[in-house]
Length: 80
Picture 1 (cartoon, rainbow, N blue to C red):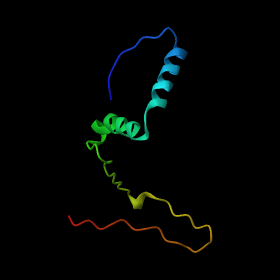
Picture 2: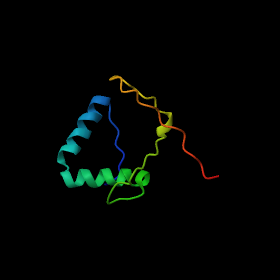
Picture 3: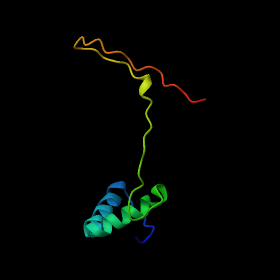
Picture 4: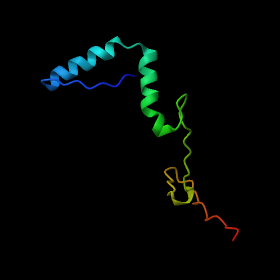
């Protein structure tokens, strides 16, 4: 991805030039450019970083639409 600075007389002219450049890129070039831009955020060029989510199940409310008398979860017992 070459970095260059160009000036335009209007926003519309700049958008047209940007679209013309994008149309000339192949899919591989677009993906390579995307990965170069995103690499600092994901700390990996060849792939994406895995994301793990921790959710506290005990703060959820229990919905008993069918009248099954579902009991909410009890608080977990801590070891210490």
